[in-house]
Amino acid sequence: MPKKITPYITKDVVSLDENKTVLDAAMEMKVRYIGSIVVTGESGVVGIFTERDVTMKVVGKGKDPDLLLLKDYVDKDPVTVRPDEKCSACLELMKEHRCRHLMVKDGDQFVGIVTIRGIIQLMLGEKEELIGHLEKYITGSL
Image 1 (cartoon, rainbow, N blue to C red):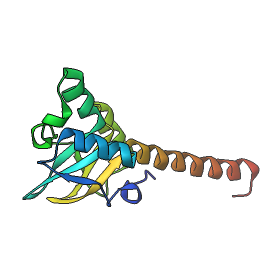
Image 2 (image 1 turned 135 degrees about the horizontal axis):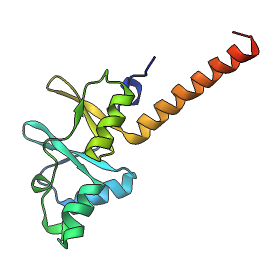
Image 3 (image 1 turned 30 degrees about the vertical axis):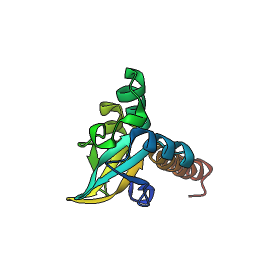
């Protein structure tokens, strides 16, 4: 049975206000050794800002991250999944949209994020479980 992402949702996310700079976000990601920041504003969660955004939208275009505000570079329409989504569906979305972080929402309510690392851990666990069942079947100890 395909596993759901529920146990691998990061609910205690790192967030920054949309009026902080891109450099603030990059430094926070470096210090915490993470690949994304949830960006917030007056109305709550605005979107997600990732290490790829730093590279592709800012540094790769020769812009100074210390002079740019997150609100101008955050992905305000990130790929979103439900908390009960299957990991295989999440992996397909990540491949399709070329991203490594998905925002998890229950309706309009922000729940957390799920990363490709969490999805891979979940899928490896699934495969190990299957191997265990197959070994028991083959050896007759099932």
